[in-house]
Length: 110
Image (cartoon, rainbow, N blue to C red; front, side, top):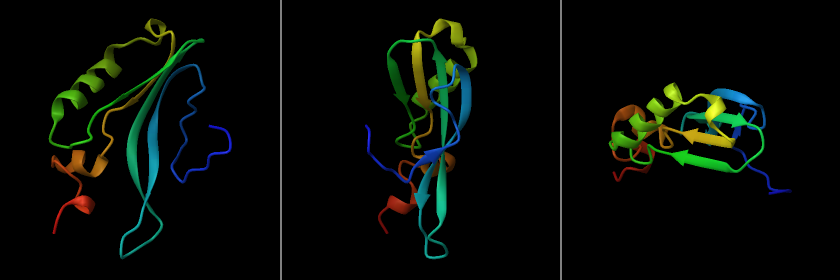
């Protein structure tokens, strides 16, 4: 997506060979500060050329099965078993995952 800009950033080099772990930094404003960010866990496994696949879980923080599965996959999958790039986001809605709630507080009805 050449020419596309985003305020979401990460220090994980998704082009690097091997296994990398870190966070996506998603901008988040509150009444206290407009310069906050939400850490969203990201892991990338890359081994040579091939397709890129994205696996996500934790859209709803109280749905644990996908989160648990992706964490088990990260602990057991060797980079040599991947051909291409595997991007894993095990807790996409990080505030809801941390709270074990269906939605994050910022999107919950008041």
